[in-house]
Image (cartoon, rainbow, N blue to C red):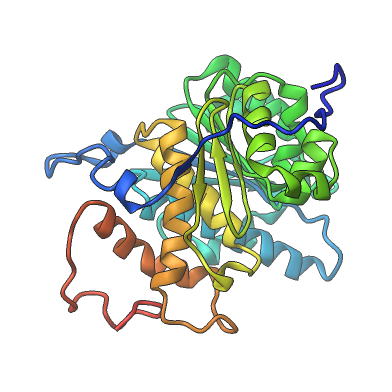
Length: 323
């Protein structure tokens, strides 16, 4: 690594890829007792959204609201006790029709983008055990919210999409964050070209994680997951995930797992596996498949991870659920 954070081109030959599969993940999630209450399983906060998109403002608002609602539901499907969706105040009316299980929190904005307000941030993060940030955030101030979260709370963090722009500014996440770049975002994060990353993705994933003291998922047809030491390769998934919103679901899944104290590396591994496996379970064709269809199949994935065999019946008629 150079002093400016641009990766050297020397190819590492000491990386041992570990499988991120059912055999290595089954029966590894914390046990949940029947006596547990929602407060026992944490609070996931989802921060994102912006009105600064090309197109009619009402459509931009609707899209931002749907993205946050999608991530929030994914967090609940993955075990979070409660979720809060935080977005620019001007978009709050667009969110209400999409609220099902989550609370809403309005953040101050300027020009359609979230701006930092210390009092609002402290109020939002009070009681949070995880925060997923960046989805649809555009030029919103992810850095200041992430910095306060890391400095003044014990919550863990997921950075995705526009939230990844602040990763270099943070520099050291202290092992409390999961970063989820696709190859284009990884290029901006590392200063490498996409061709260089494609030539040695496992090495780049590990070195990025090591430098930032975070867990990194380098998303792709094969996804690489590293905490800076171990490197896992995830091969679940198919072409059904090639739709906008799939990455937002992944952030929600990981945020939900982190909310109930699943450790960052394990949450990243389970999240990557679960997203891909849900797409494999879905009976919806790849042309028509939507991120919502992943939601219906997540229960099957968590059944599988916990060794439960579902024999039809409940949920069998839901969209996306296999016969």
